[in-house]
Every structure is written in C-alpha cells, then in structure tokens.
Image (cartoon, rainbow, N blue to C red; front, side):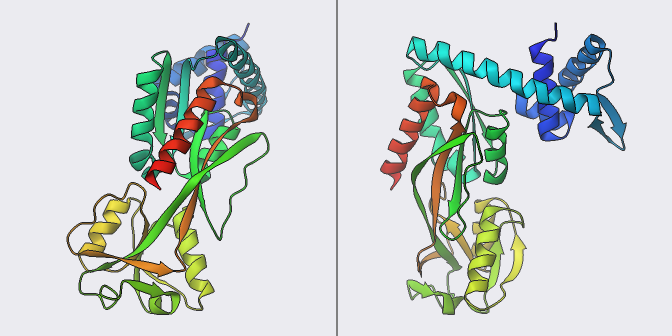
Length: 300
C-alpha cells in the first residue's frame, strides 16, 4: 500500500517545482522530502525524479502519480472535514497563506485570538503573494488564503475555490517632505505626470495595478526603483528618490521625511479569504474567516 505522506511529498514537488520549495511548504527539510521520494520510488519500483541541471523534474509516471495523490488528498480532506464538523470545534492543523502587508497588519491579532480560544487548533502562517497563494489553495497545498485584488483589476476565484469579501484597504500617494505635492494634501492623476516612481517588481499585483492606472491617465510611468517590501519603498521615498503608492494595511507610522497625499480617485484594494469548496464546512475555516472579517471591520 502506498504511503500517504510520501504521496503528499510528491504532490508538493509537482505543485512547487522543486524539492526545496516543497520542503518549505510542508515544513520539512529538503533532505526529509528527498528521503520520502526515495522510499516512494522503492515502493513503486519506479523512477519518479530525474536530474536536470541543478534541479529535478518529474517523470511521466511521477506526474500521473501526483495527480492520483491530489485526488487522494482531497478524499482525506473531506473525511477530516466531516470529523471536525461532527466535533463542532476547530481542531487539527490549519495552514494560511497571506500577502505581506496582511501577514503584518491583520494576521497577528487573528492568530493570537485563534490560539487563545482554540488550543486544539494548530495554525501555521506563510507569507505568499496573492497570485501564488490562490493557486496553492486550489491545489490543496494550503487550507486558507488571504489575498487581494484592485478595483480596476478583479481576480476571480478558480473552480473549486470559494471566497468571501473581508473589506477594503485604502492607499495613499507617499512623497518626500519638500515635494511640491506635500503641501497640497490631495492630488489627481494629472499631478502624477513626470514623477519618478518606486514600486514593487513586475509580476506582482501592485506593480500591475500601478502600470495600468498610470497608462490609463495617458502617460508611461518612469519606474526608477523596485522593492518587494513596503518598508523598503518607504525608506527610498524618505531619501527623496521618488514617490510611491502604498496601502495603509500593515504600513505603520510614516518615517520622518515622508508625507501622505490623498489621491483622487482614492486607490483601494479589496481583501478576500479563499478556501476549497470541500473544506467549506470545516469549523477551523468558518471560525477563522469570521475572525478575519471582524478584525478587518475594526481596522476600517
């Protein structure tokens, strides 16, 4: 009989693309994941991974087995959901993936409250960008995702994934002290022409939103600095190196030398919680989502 833990390891490699990334997602060491695959190869008498350059790729047989593993894991999830539902209280492990500013500005209080109220629930948080976290939920690699989209770029939930709206996260234009807009307190899109921009790297939701918004106003933005962390962007603004649009969630107090300017129209992100349809009745999911909504309302 095939071992479910070893199948889970293979499925994680298929989803994440490498042994190291799979190990991070599962909370194991890369060596432990490799050992699981070696044992699974002996069990199946089949080569599952092949070396290619510095990495590995799944063989055709491994891809087939990974697909079967995903189906088995879905069956196990449904069984666990039914048992937890019958108990009527959140139990077991709950994995959450959240984008950086939510992980900093929203999740700490929610996780603390969950831990205090439900000692039988083991919650694990991973910081993941929305375009990745939603896919991880769909593929069964994480139980719950806190993600966002922008008002001009909605992100629909994939098949088999449910979502609930949590609230809005408003954004400000941040400029260096002494910038012409710093004393105005308010700015329109026409005021942004010719600015030097500090933003997130290409491929992120925030970067794509900024490009789309500025192009819609009739000019090509000059992106001079790119940084994933909002706090790094704030430091660059404080140094007088450009301007940035940064959401309020998890931003904290502005450092000296940075002034917030209200944009018209006001940019806003919409926050969502997402989970697989098969786990919708799980008390751990419903309780966590309820807490997320409550905390978002308090922040608003």
